[in-house]
Length: 128
Image 1 (cartoon, rainbow, N blue to C red):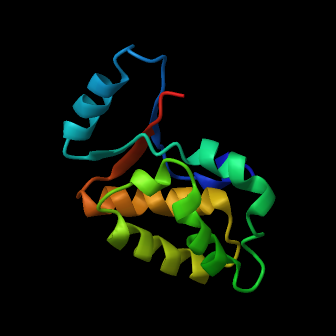
Image 2: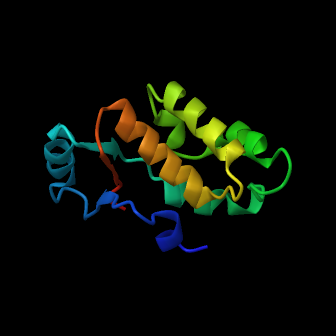
């Protein structure tokens, strides 16, 4: 499954760039738009890649629950604040998904974040 498959019908916005290049300003301008919700420095892909050796195959029985137990250990995710409701919704959706994956987790996360903010578009600002 490719990211194109995961994000079919969706157009996430990614704010990337070098340090001190204006990514925070761009993030704030985009996030101020009523139809856009941008998560601040999720660093999700970097964290998941670093933990790849200990992460379960999400299609295995009980693996989603094990992943959510490991999630607080992912660097940067431990700094996500006010995300308990969003993560609870994502977990329910991932458990119910017939093909759970780390890409689907990210899609559900961005979707839940957008809806929580009343937005129709979502994105992530992770300069790295």
